[in-house]
Amino acid sequence: MSSSQHQSPTPPALIDLQAEFDRIVGPDNVLADEAGRRAYAHDRLPFANFCERQGRLAGVLPRLVLRPGTADEVQAIVKTARRLGVQLIPYGSGSGVLGGAIPISAEVTVDLRRLGRIVSIDPGDAMVTVQAGMNGAALEAELNAQGYSTGHLPQSIEISTVGGWAACRGGGQASSRYGKIEDIVIGLKAVLPDGTAITVRPLARRATGPSIRDILVGSEGTLGIITELTMRIWKLPEVEHGVVLAFPSVPAALNAAREIMQAELRPMVARIYDSTESRDRTQGMAEFQDRPILAIYVFGGRAPLVAAEQQMAMEICALHGAMEAGPGPYEHWRKNRYVALSTPWQKAGYFSDTIEITGNWTALPAMFEAMGTAARAICPDVHFGAHWSHIYAEGACQYMTVRLPPMEHEKALLLHARLWQAIEDLALDHGGSIAHHHGVGVFRNGWIARELGGALPMLQQIKDVLDPGNLMNPGKLGLRSPEGAVVVGHVNSAPSRQEP
Ligand SMILES: Cc1cc2nc3c(=O)[nH]c(=O)nc-3n(C[C@H](O)[C@H](O)[C@H](O)COP(=O)(O)OP(=O)(O)OC[C@H]3O[C@@H](n4cnc5c(N)ncnc54)[C@H](O)[C@@H]3O)c2cc1C
Image (tube, rainbow, N blue to C red):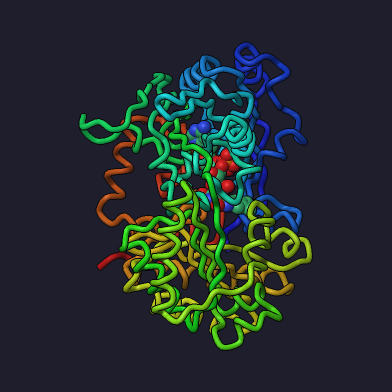
């Protein structure tokens, strides 16, 4: 077990450092007291929650927390940090579940939420420009009021920022229709680790070399601070139809989803639940007695297109043995779509976590079986449930909930470590990716070498050139940690297996 109990010492230069940053953002926007800093010592990484139940931190306290109100202030912070050799962590809302915002060395955290407003809505070009610290639900509400949506609707929309979405390369619940965040962001502004402010002008597309936008999207705060985003917007759907289906088996439901996407249909939402997750959602429903697998599809857009798309998709589902069922599971999902389902379990002493991976269609059924078998072998009492959402022509995201019952703490951490190890290794063994939309943070560092293979040194070289002092969110995304950094998690520095 490699988490640390130590806290960062108060550095001798703290007072001077505070004065330096006071001058930029004003004293009211520099948090130096322990209570203020403690709120930024964790994100939603479940391992951090487990540590805190034991009265310790997974990482360390940030040295200071800064709350800039403008992009110019962000730039001044970065330049000052570079001059003083201070490490920085960009912070959205701390809803990340991989520890990307957790300090591990002597970082100063930069909370971006005061950059929280819409800059412009441009219906003519179908885009919105928004400051990076704006809350996702607030953005969506303002757009909805004018008849638009970005189409990016993550479960965490109420507790995350748009900058965090882009930094983590996230995916929303309507992604099969509108795409993931990398399809939705078309322009951005950012401050690079040397203090240079860059702009990627919002355009439908360009052929001008590798995409600078895509170097920043998914960089998890390691290559700069995103200050502004321009995103695609769409007219709100004229109609939205939710359909509940009962399938005879998981492979039947997955095959139907594959054929739907390969037929170029684009449901807004597609969710297929394994038998464990289906059972929880269909109790008492006669339709599921012989067909135990639940699928929920939502079709949305212009009425005639929706009708045609839904009809074609239903024909495909029927060929795979599905029958339509009552709307209860759809209504329940809709009501709870932005609720954090694990919170009550954590509060009751369970050790709950989620792991989302990507697999291609031909690999998914065997991968799913292997992961369930491995999880139950590690702990017969584990709750292992999976659903598939974010579907593509090539494959899908498999989203798993692994939950250990209340037990002795050290034993739970050991089992938790083994569950992660087995599931991430099996994702790679089956040709999949270790992460579909939650990112890498610090907790997935142990697998990134195997995930990227020979390309990890290339990523490190990009980091070294842009950030030679390793000052921007160091030690995240599988990149080099600062000397003496705390290791967060079980496997941070111990890659499981090397690629042959
Ligand atoms: C209940 C729950 C449900 C979730 N559901 C989804 C989901 O459906 N889809 C999904 O994609 N994710 C989901 N997540 C994960 C999380 O909400 C996302 O990763 C989210 O995008 C993080 O945003 P944030 O603003 O909270 O970022 P933080 O947690 O504050 O930061 C995350 C990472 O991004 C970096 N970062 C943040 N802002 C910036 C910036 N402006 N510039 C540069 N780097 C920055 C940080 O340094 C850190 O590395 C869920 C999390 C929870 C707790």
